[in-house]
Image 1: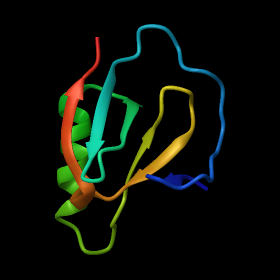
Image 2 (image 1 turned 135 degrees about the vertical axis):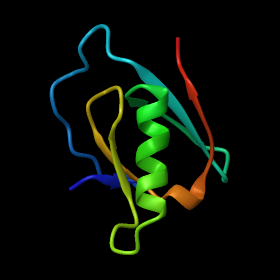
Image 3 (image 1 turned 120 degrees about the vertical axis):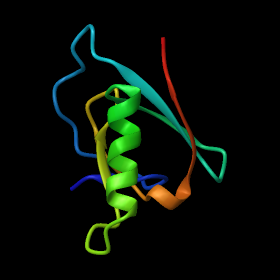
Image 4 (image 1 turned 30 degrees about the vertical axis):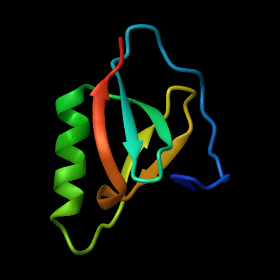
Length: 82
């Protein structure tokens, strides 16, 4: 079960591979999380989920491999990480 932003529940998988693109998501409460994925792909997923009624969370992988469910309306900023 993926965790929701701010929730302690985690699902662990193998550690990230080298060379994976990473983006940082900042939430309205000031918390941030780093997720795997190119900037445009992360933004597209948030827009896709935000415009649908039946799905309220976008699913991403944190850099440590944990799954995370993100509500698009809680996101303030998405930026690429170097």
